[in-house]
Amino acid sequence: ETGVTQSPTHLIKTRGQQVTLRCSSQSGHNTVSWYQQALGQGPQFIFQYYREEENGRGNFPPRFSGLQFPNYSSELNVNALELDDSALYLCASSLVESYNEQFFGPGTRLTVL
Amino acid sequence: AQTVTQSQPEMSVQEAETVTLSCTYDTSESDYYLFWYKQPPSRQMILVIRQEAYKQQNATENRFSVNFQKAAKSFSLKISDSQLGDAAMYFCAYRSPNTGNQFYFGTGTSLTVIP
Image (cartoon, rainbow over all chains, first blue to last red; front, top):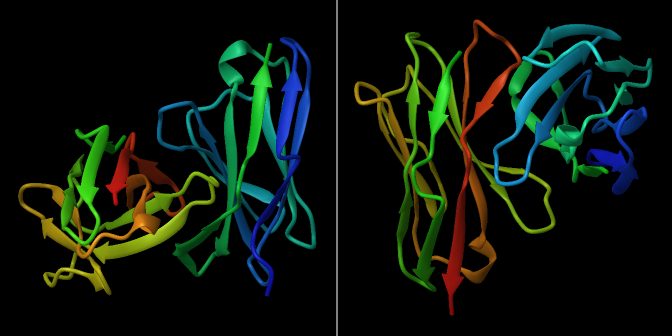
């Protein structure tokens, strides 16, 4: 059984660019959630995907979008990057029957210059 | 939206001693779930302990236990016999069955364990 993995580990972009972050869910998990963790803050829920569709979203603008693939891996896309998008991005996978059992990945550190 | 407050940005404890981390939350719901997560310097969040609001008995996991006071909306974490490996950021989190998948996290408490 493999855990949740994320790539890349670190990423540096400039303002206005677009970025794609990737997540591979824990084996057998059918939902994936994405969180943004700004420096010194707790994670904030961006959205969740189940059956390749978004089924819950936090208070984030539409330039944050995602995809979930049939193998349950996922992408987070952010367009028109802003300086405030600099953060650690975490993904977490779970079974839809058991949201309480979330497993987190190590995160991707995004720096926007 | 629910809010989760951790009023202790930093805490320290001597190895083998006991420490309590505080958490309060704001909600109008009667059924919900509370969690403590640990985020070591390597960044991967790990679930420490979970409490269902409908259960009166406080959850316990080995050296970790909680003091759940539903009326006071308080959910503290007690770490007994602290070990060097307990050093990490600790986040309190809330989940409502009505919002399904959305977790609300506090701002965290950084725990230092002094040898």
